[in-house]
Length: 169
Image (tube, rainbow, N blue to C red; front, side, top):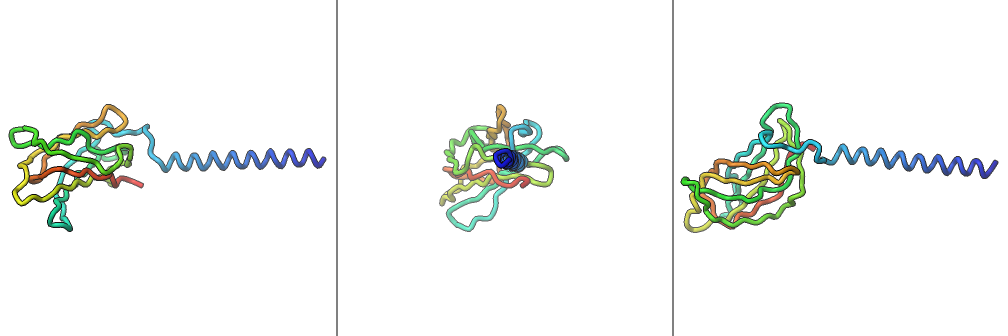
């Protein structure tokens, strides 16, 4: 009888541990984004704006991402890739850039939770390149989402591309 009870107790403990592991895994799965609802082209819009800087040597910009349709919820992944600044004639200004964030980071966008990427560039004594447009691709988990956005002001390089932040928790 003692051996039989010990086996049942061990089996019950094993089942409880397995069940708690499943529940913890389910909680992690619902808390962490997956690739099942990756943003697709047309679901996300972007725009750029200059924001205040705490340094006279640095210009700060934000590229903000929003869903295009109320009720849309999707995952945006990575950082702007192949970022190119263009002049009024559409020519590449040749500004270099580098990233300080992760290409694998994901944020969940919906109509009330936008995301953003911060960009920083040096302020030169002379005015920067007369950029009026920026083009880039967000990597995502598909073939990527291409963007072409108006650029708010002149810019100098190299341009630092920060981490994708924001979105819904």
